[in-house]
Each structure stands twice: as C-alpha cells, then as structure tokens.
Image 1 (cartoon, rainbow, N blue to C red):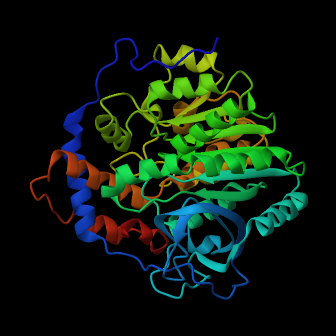
Image 2 (spheres, one colour):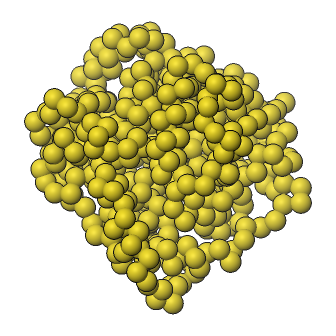
Length: 440
C-alpha cells in the first residue's frame, strides 16, 4: 500500500521565523534600487545568425492581451488557446547559462537579448499538426511539458522555458502549459485558484499526449505553485483512466509549493503505475518558509529534510528520487534561486547528465562542494536525465523571487524602512548579462 508523506518529522521543529525580517529588508532594498524592464517584449524581430532558436508549442487558459507584444494577459479565458512561438537566444558570449537576458529596450537585439522571431496563435487542429510534425523529427519522440510557478507573466514563462530547453540540451519537443497568473504578489490567492481553473485543460493536454501514437515519451517539469497544477492534473487523469500511461516517464518537481500531506494523498491516488518522480528540495528556501506560514504552518514539499524520518522512509517507499540543494551556497538571500544563480552548476551537471550519466557518477568532476550537496540524493534519474538537474537551475524566475519578499513584508509588516546602499552596490556589480536580476 502506498505510504503517505507525513506532516512532521520526528523531532521536527517549526520554521525559524526570526529570519524573516532579514528577508523583508532584502526585498525592500531590491525594490528601491532596481528599475523595471520593458513590457511587450514578444513583438517579433528579425533573426540574428549568431543566435540560437527554440521552437515551442503553447497551450494556455490566459485571455488575450490588448498589447500585441504581450500576447496573453493574466486573466482567465473561457477555453484554452494555442500558439506557436520561436524564441531567439543570444550566443554564450552575451550571457551565462541559467540566465535570461531580458532586453533593456525595445525592440530587442537578438545578438544580446532574448527575443521572439515568431508568435502565431493557432487553432487546435494546427496545434496538433505542429506537435506531430515536431515529434516525428525528434530523435526519440519525446515531449517535455513545462508548467511555471506563481507570479509569472506570459513572457516570463516563454523566455524561461526557452532558456531551459536551450541550456539543458533537451532533445524533447517543448510544450509550455501556462495558466493565468497576474504577475503580482498580491494576487497569490488568484494565482492559486487559476491553477485549479486550469486543471481540466492540462489534463486534456496529457490525455492527448497519451493517445498520440507519435509521442513515445512524456516528461513534465513544474516549478513552485505550478507543481500543484501538475500533480492535480496527473491525479485527475489517473482517477479517470484508472492509472497513468506508461509513456509518462518523468515528473520533475522543483521547489514545490505543495502541502506535504496533500502530496502524499495525490501520489496515492495516482496508483502503483506512476512516472518517476524527482523532487528538488532546499531546507533554507525562505520563500517556501513564507508559504508554510500562509498555509497554516504545514510543511511545504520543497523544503523538507529528505534524510529525516518519516520523510526518508516514505520517499523511498514511493520510489521518489530526491536531490537536496541545501548545501549549495548560491543565489540570493531567499535561497529560492540557487540553480539560477549558479551557471557553472547548470553547465557542468547539465552537460554530464544529458550524455546519460547519473548524478552520483564519480566522473562528474564538480568538486567536493557539489558532491557533498548531492551525494546519495539521486539514484534513479530517467531518460530525461539532462533536464532533471539542469532544468531547475533555470526555472526560478527572478521576478518570482522579488515578489516573494514583498509577500513577506505584507505578512509581517515593513522592515522599519530598512534601506541602504547595499542593493545599489549589488545591482551595479552585476554583469550586463545578469542585469535582469534588478528588473521588476
């Protein structure tokens, strides 16, 4: 019988809330120092021969935006819409792996910025033809579905997914499932309900992929609140079909903002034939610590200690691979963007795993600090192994990071007007390629 993950580990303690004022101060100073970036960045431009390209299919429950360069808004549509998008990614000399080089002005310059070369809304029949055509051209007939997290505008999800696909070296056909997020911290409740609103649409996507004989393998990558949508859609599909199809091979849960008790129930409802689940956790993720407080002090799945009982035994009993990032000291003060701020890890781990090596392979050569952070944590990486580690490095959006700190301030009050020159220095010291970290 499938075991449920329990709420508290033996000897577990509530989160350490004295850390929160520091998070608030960080959020306030980031706000004061960093300016916004242009909107409407999805207006197509001409291609640059030095830039790479990523083609993706989009399915969304977002309403159409009034501004053409935004394409879709954060409001809810009555029915799903489909689009074909081609994203241009500047050469490695213009950015580091794990980064999205947001344009500083419009139109974007494909030699230095992320840009779009094509944005076309299509009907369902055209979307299916696009998918079938690209799957037939792929080397293994695989599809990767990406579901973004809280506080993401449409362009955030598009550019981030394109970066994931490019930097990980994924061979799978990219399908972005994007839900109506208003891109505002104060819309946390709206965003959560939007994931529920989108469950049927995502399940229909999964059902289509299951039926399509051209599709040989499906992997799902979700981040933060998007994990709730992914898990609920899989659960719904499993109940409807009395199980999940064998071609659904991998589900990668990055920093999941999911109640640990509810996750145990969702896994049980999926039955015994399940995809391989890979869970990325970090016990010092302060964004998830805030979410824990919002949701009644129940542990969030992305912040558990996988080596502590009962989590260790129950994760093993359910065949869930865990990669613990707690010891990786990178990223901002919220510890929610470690992989996004560690391009070397993206490159090294992503390159090795995309060639079929497992994370614990001694040939990784990543240094003692990486080995210490991951040793014994991963044992059953699947055929989408290149994505399992390199993708979470890319999915954490810097705008989500900033809005989480604003949420902390909303909960516990302002930090006493804490402002300093710290962020001015931090923003000024960043390279041009990383300037997007000080945006919106």
